[in-house]
Amino acid sequence: MDSAEYERKIASRFAAFDQDGNGYIDREDFSSAAAKLLAEFSVTARSDKGQDLYSGAEAFWQGMAGIADVDGDQRVTRQEFVTSAVKRLRDNPKRFGEIARPFVHAVMRVADEDGRGVTPAAVERVLGALGVDAGIAAAAGAALDTDGDGRIGEDDVLTAFAAYYVTPEPN
Image 1 (cartoon, helix red, strand yellow):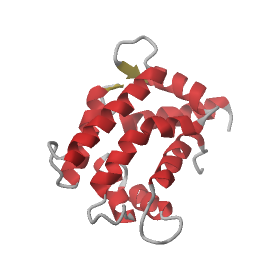
Image 2 (cartoon, rainbow, N blue to C red):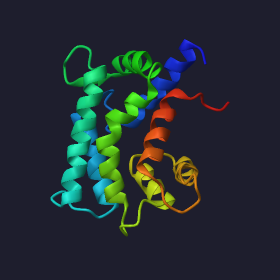
Image 3 (tube, rainbow, N blue to C red):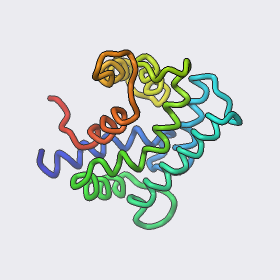
């Protein structure tokens, strides 16, 4: 994949983070994502899982801002996102997954409704709550169950999350 194609791909991922569609990513986008997930799984914000999710969202925001908020205005523009993501992810895609780890961990706790692990259906619900197309969400949930046991591990989610940003799109 050439540099221009990679930048276009990364730019398309910007919208997934810009939850309110205002043209930049900020702390509120991460809080909004957390609120949507709590509502989807009927978990209260004051519960341990709810508090962990908000803390994870804040940690993810801080990590994102740390690598992408070039001008320090507590907002990440599309250009900052593209420039920073391209520069940092191309060399080390797992770094982005590690920045997301506290949030992903908390999301998985919320989505594990029976205490036995996250199911493909739960992943589909998570992605749907975050605005991902239903067909894509269903395919992602199924694909993440790599061993076919009906449960999805955190490392599988983090690996897929990082790969989402660095692998070419099908034509």
